[in-house]
Length: 289
Image 1 (cartoon, rainbow, N blue to C red):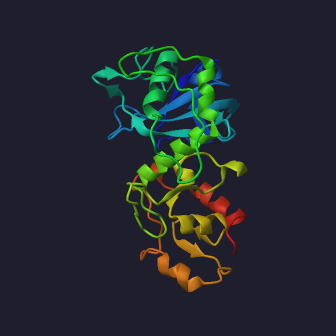
Image 2: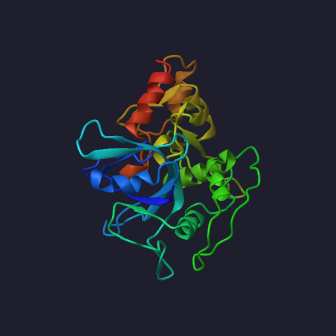
Image 3: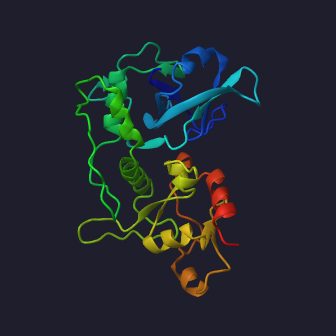
């Protein structure tokens, strides 16, 4: 097994849903097989305008032939492993490449050294105080690193990436940053006296039902909007129109807090907006028609 890099570009010829699967040509099959059961980081190409650099980490569960395109394969991502970086990790930090032990910088699928993997994780998932509004996080055994000094990562450290409190914190940080702390339904951006945002990070498809900790499976919602969304009293169409359930007992009050556009206020970048796959799941399994 080995850590690795998957290059991804939105709108490419490859049918990728980074949270679910990654499509690649046969030429990379032997290399990708080495990553089964281990972690990869997603990276946008350097030449892409406004490239995010490294933007997420995920674990490869298995590889299967693509049923739609001959000579292509899909790396299936282990459920519950995908986690977005916030901040995303640039290609260069302090004048040095973050990925330093490059065998082939152009390869879409390539191995990643232990020290490069550790450095990227430390930069993309930093310790901070972006905590849930309620509840405590258990302490984490973090490995110390600096962008200038690579180090070897011990295998037990990767268990942090599956630690639920750690993932909740990282998901909240990424969602609130993408939405600028503004509720997608109400349009409110409320901050308390201590500088704490009122908005919460909501999963569209809950984790307990197979939903990933991904921006495209997330919404920034105020406490009341979050409560209504989780209980199926409000929902979203694929075009992001806000729907109100007929089962709401006080529809006029609900209508009054919805922003004037009647559409969810979402990030401008397509890759950060709710994915239709998750919105459809919510409508079919949660929304009360």
